[in-house]
Image (tube, rainbow, N blue to C red; front, side, top):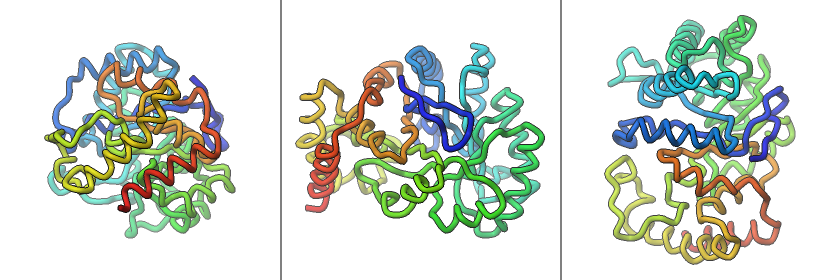
Length: 315
């Protein structure tokens, strides 16, 4: 496993990050926790030291499951733990954005308790909250940082203007955006900005909810949130599957990689990217992608894959 410095921090993180969104029953249904634990054990054995979660994942459930794992294996000191805040969960059925000072402080304490730790390595604002002034958010986070409860501050799902507003009052060390072969909007502004400012980037939905793994066919039926997603239904689904099979899968086989590993290697080739987050449910899932960071793609192939996928989906 290869490691990179995250932004300007003292954290060196694995280029694959173990994501925990799969522990969100409302999106993914119920999964085997025992199998998830074995997957995380295997990931750590293979060198992954970076784990990303959020209080929103399962309304605290993902953090609690991860906390149980950390306590059982006594491995907190070996890992870089990132989590996020944004949603007020007082009424889980009617949650709403809340990045007010008091709620940030309260939710940080709740996350620490669920994670069974006394500090969070990377504490991230999950999304932009237009009702809270950036200086109020910064005041809460900087106080938590002074108390040693959080080490570094990051953001997710934000544009350059929003990041810049926060950066008037505090340092931002990491951006967590949507980025993969099918979702490339951040190449225009956000990734160049992060390169310029030495802000780390950790991508989510790195495999586009699994569609870039190459394991699905037109007959695949989804029973989770993907069943209602336009990318996984009708002609869109067929176009993307064809693009993955014709372009990505063929090249991956020639390179001795799985399709998923090639899709992640494509992400990690971009110089702005520190780590790619991958949601892993089973031990074998991590084994299919662990070779992704071994090398980067040459320039010609990177553009070839990007163009072929984009052109196939547009048709």
